[in-house]
Length: 253
Image 1: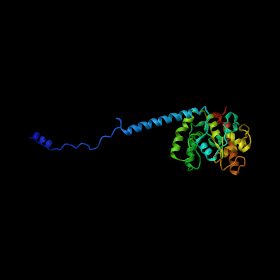
Image 2: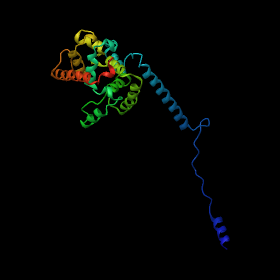
Image 3: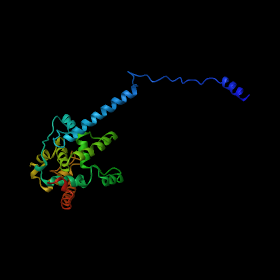
Image 4: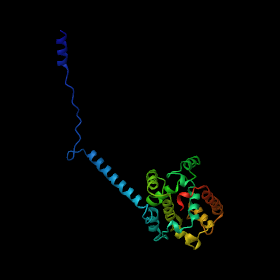
């Protein structure tokens, strides 16, 4: 009787409905999403390899300029900029720039975590970017505060540190930094403000040039205001300090 009851129950059941969902259409035997994803990954990989090659190449080949420099050239019609090797620049210039912008340059790998923490604690009013980050931004990226640019900078910065020497980072920085509207690099800045070559710059002149870097279009190294005078005095002391304590050793001969 139990068996008959089970049979009758089984007979009374309706067969389960099959899903009405249609199978994903395929293009040439491959789903479109997978096809697009595969090509997107290939494109990203190619771009990443090309960009890595460019960064590696710039370790020995002088870059023509940067994205921001190109934009200013298009806006102004022309810019003043000539490349100069670091060996032809007074050593105090590199020390002054490092003291002003990135005193722990020789001890970090591209990101100064203590400076970043201070910048966050100060509500973002204090800059936390290292020289390497500034090179990544000025040479390969665009100016701005977008998350996309910051993410790209975070990827490029360790690449630069990996392929370039510390001395090379300082050299490129000095050759792409903006010192006045349309004036880029230490060679152009030396003639623009003081009428001398970079090799002839004094410690006072070097400190003043470093002091105007955060806002070069609103400050002058040859006609310094009170802020630039005070800042350049601190930079002179800082440059002497990092020379004494060894924090300049990584970029000096």
